[in-house]
Image (cartoon, rainbow, N blue to C red; front, top):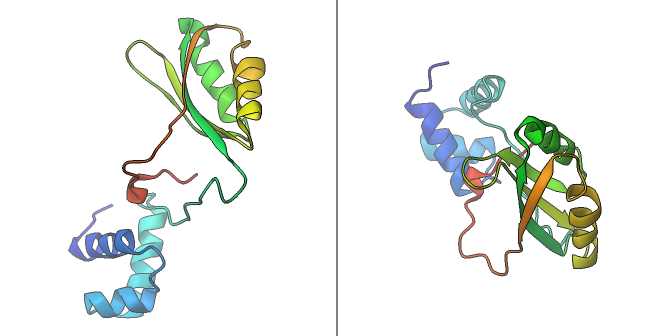
Length: 150
């Protein structure tokens, strides 16, 4: 799919304010509302963009969260990541390079629940060699335009 300057301008406007209506984006860019609607459908169909929402996990009752880095036996890495991806508490899981093989972000209603998931569900998986759990204590920067929204 070829992306042109109009497509890029639409994306940039929505990155500024994802709640902008098609009409507002069209007004800012000097094109018709139909053009915006058509271009967004094309971009979504090509999987170049995904429109969605970003939530405040604390407001939704997810008071605790941590990045869990996992060192795994090589033959079990992808299977472990796949199992973690199925957890309702898993917001992100990916394969990594370096000292750890997998990184996941796990959220929970409390620190106790977070510890339970890490200790009773992840640490005991076949092939897990070592865990490193990092709980963020402050947000310095969070770019929502870089978020993956499943």
